[in-house]
Image (tube, rainbow, N blue to C red; front, side, top):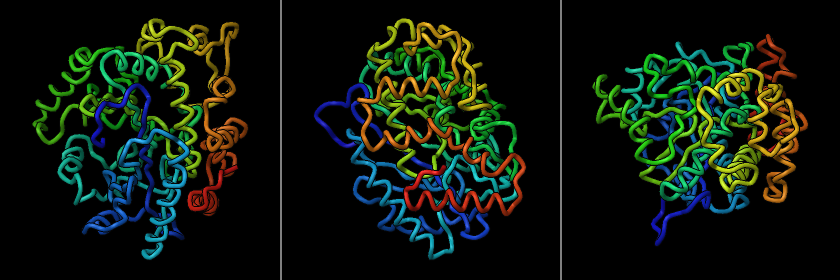
Amino acid sequence: MNARKRPYHLLEAHHLSIGYSVVERESLRVLPLANELFKEPRGWHKSGVMEWQPGVAAHQLLLRNARPARKWAALHERFATQVRSVDALLAKHNAMLLPTGTSPFMHPAQETVLVTGIDAERNALNHRLFNCAQHGWSNSNGADLSLTFSGDGEFSKLHAAARLLLPIIPGLAASSPLLEGAFQGFHDARLEAGLHAREKHPELMGSLIPEPVFTQEDHDREILAPIAQVLGELGAIPGLDPEQANARGVVARFDRQLMVMQVADTQECVAADLAVAELINAVLRALASGRWVSTYLQRAWSESDLLPIFLQTIKDAGNTLVTNRDYLLMFGLMKQEQLSVQKLWQHLFVDLYGEISPEARQPIAHILEHGCLASRILRHTGRTPTPDKLRAVYSELAECNRTGRLFT
């Protein structure tokens, strides 16, 4: 973060990091160009407040705002301009950016090429420990939202809110229904694969829902200490520190006073990515302020309480039926016996409409009317699409990314 006279306080500023696959324009097969693109310093790596980074694999690129932003509206054109300029650069290699949470064309076991420049040592270590040539690692693109807090009091409020909201985020943001050419039974196949990507060492990700800890001391003892022990046993330290290795759906970075929400899939265009992030931010702000229920009640939820909702939403996205009345009560729904996740998001959107920027309202309304991107993709492809149908749909998604158009 940039130098300031005082720290950023609760939800005062935010970063967004959006992941893409680099693919060949006609076939849409992944192209490991990051090693070449990042071989020498180039102006497009960092442009003002925006920057590009490689992922763990050489076909993955991540776009983020390098400095914390306080206004959502200011980010729309900055992100869109960067996507257009990098897509133009990739055109010289007969390549382009492909959005969504996964590439349905990729076979990671055969096609994974690790990045050899930036973060090469860490990536090699991850590959040795977990095998990055699998879905959930080299075929995984998310829109990670980092939010500011200052001190234990603000951490407590934000962590309680983030844990509570985490289970329903795939109902809004799932965009990865297809792996290796077919529907695998999950609207958010990226998260489903991620649940298994580190299963040999469960301390590193838990159940994706973080433990109910509300001070830095408790966080370090209950989350980071077990991770450090595992890494020590594996001989990984100092190549991978516990905070970097923590793969839960919500991760605290106390050195930077940031909380990272790493559950949302990449959408079809940056307007949708930013809108999803802004709505998540607005709901977290409402929860942290006690808009519907107190923080005390939010803190009472365990992983075992939240996990069933989360797993079902990974599977069925917005069609998931929430039958836990106490969970619905957390969002101000006092008389509901049950409600679909999509209807729950509609309720939140209406309730918080005045707190959401005009730039975000139309994309969110589109998602809530037509379903999350995963549902819209499946309506076009079916569950066992032909290769030609798959290419046609995902070529259109790439065009949405270039032009900023929402996918219907």
